[in-house]
Structure formats: C-alpha cells, structure tokens
Image (cartoon, rainbow, N blue to C red; front, side, top):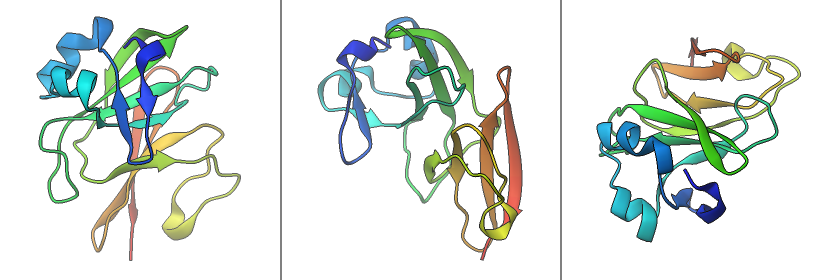
Length: 142
C-alpha cells in the first residue's frame, strides 16, 4: 500500500492504493476502487512493533453480523513490506492495545499492539503477531 496516500478517518476507513498487496486484497473481496476513492474499513496499528504503520483489512461483506477473512499489510517507508492473513475469520475487528497486565476475562498482556474480535456470549479472540506469524487466543466473554 502506498501509505503516503493513506488517510485514516474517524470512522476507521483507510483510503489509498494497494500497491504490491493488490492481489491479496482482491482475493478477500476488497473493492480497490472504493479503497482509492471512498475508503475501506481498516484497523491501523504497529503490529510488528517496528515503528511503521500496519493496516488490517477485512474482506467483502465486513460487519459485526458475519465473519470475513482479514489481510494485514506490514509497511516500511510507506510501502508494503509483507502481507499476512489472520488465522481465523473475524466479525468485529478492533485494535488491541498494549497491556501491562491481563485484561477483563483473561485477555493477555502484550508489549505490542494486536487485533481483537470482541465476542458477546461466545468468545473473544485476540490476535498478536510474534514477528513471524499471528497467534490467536480465545477468551470467554460475558
């Protein structure tokens, strides 16, 4: 993704071009024209803790009512360095912040940002990148 042209708005949309991640985003149904013109849902963070912004993009049909695949674009100097897939499909993707101690319902502590799919009645899933791959953990929720 040419992150030089990515904008993050208050409603969690990223706007820009996919660059070398075009095929991976098309594979999960991201509308590249919408990404370029109107924006596409995304979560921005620094998942590999390298000081560069990373972007998690849910696939087509993303809503809190159904699960979709997610691709994460890791960047370096405004260009896509690597693309990886979360190990599970998600429904309500949000940024999982740094925590010095375990959180509610046993969600893990972490020194780096991650992603979370907060569950209601079922389970909450936390996704943390260990530098090589995503690790998913399930936690009971209220």
